[in-house]
Amino acid sequence: MISAALSGFALSLSLILAIGAQNSFVIRQGLLNQHVLAVVLFCGLSDMMLICLGVLGLGQLLTPVFDLYGAWLFALAALWLAGYGVLRLRN
Image 1 (cartoon, rainbow, N blue to C red):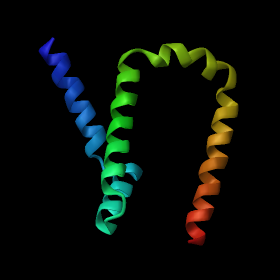
Image 2 (image 1 turned 60 degrees about the horizontal axis):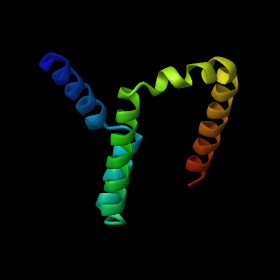
Image 3 (image 1 turned 135 degrees about the horizontal axis):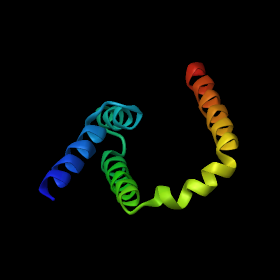
């Protein structure tokens, strides 16, 4: 039991500590001193909520949805990211 808890803790810590889009946004907001508390609270609470949903088995509930609409969801996500990338390149 303790081994599983330590593995879960280490995995969660590695996901949170990796410098990705969310963490770079939090760092940027902190350096600019803009809405630091709100950003940290929102990111921390959303991470906690998503981890809890993952532990509680939300993936099992969503598997039929992904089976039916997986290709459409992938295409929409690709378009969203491409559009966001173009907007970021313009700025």
